[in-house]
Length: 351
Image 1 (cartoon, one colour):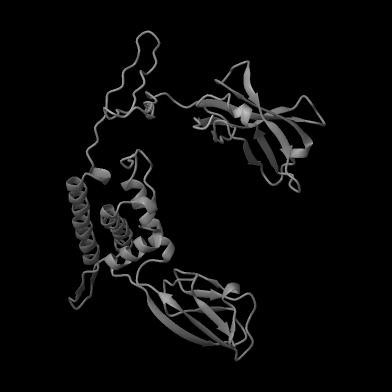
Image 2 (cartoon, helix red, strand yellow; image 1 turned 90 degrees about the vertical axis):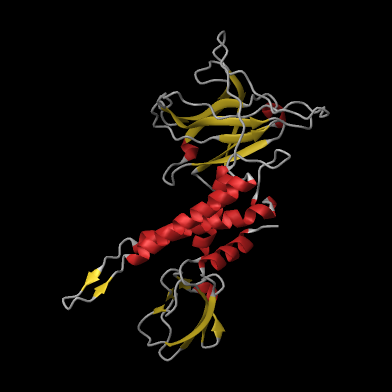
């Protein structure tokens, strides 16, 4: 079973960026609280730092990319600082994990397993682990190539030439090889970005101007209810109406109680307003489906809690709209909408 740690280790092995241990000692001069390690990038989370034999790892700020250590206070003159940990050749732990996560998200986009479930990192088939690592190595090599692209060739007056741009060309050649390798694996195994998918053209009803729904096909002996295919709807070039109201979409589950915390700017005091918030079937509707219960959050003047009961979420369609308005208590003529958005409700199973 794949996990982020194992995939990250495999990616480091592919890049030749495996970790190496180090131990380095400083003698404090009593004038600075900032020390530079001769190794970088480093694994700051697992680094052990001692001051005169006392472990102070949790109080020291370590810059992973540069190797600088910053203490909360200036160590006394003659104090012995010892740092021990792991360093790498190219990338920090966070950067490697970002490459793996980005490659995984793109590799599994819009794809599901044989049971129609979303593919998660811990459910990734073992056959697809290496293609994901191959694609992640391509992303990592692009980062190295970007850094190398700033190097220029050097020509000395005595005729000596240093072709520093050769590193960039070699990296770009390796990227093309890796891209071709990933493409071949995906095409031959029918996975990832080069998987061949079969779709049905969508029809629009001439009488209602609505899409005719498409349902997932079932096996001949499968008696379960057909499941509707949720497909993105094109905008047909339509522009989005401009609005100064921040957008916050809400996701709910039909028949379940719902609670959410709304955050406002620090300088905003929600207790100076009376609040109203509703859900409507469509924007501009004069009739709301349900109204939120709005409460102040204990100890916070810049947050509100909105909630619905299970009976209220039972009434919601799959897609509807909401907003929240505040009326200033000191001047009831001042009414303003502070948030708006879409409400997406997932259909329930247990009735």
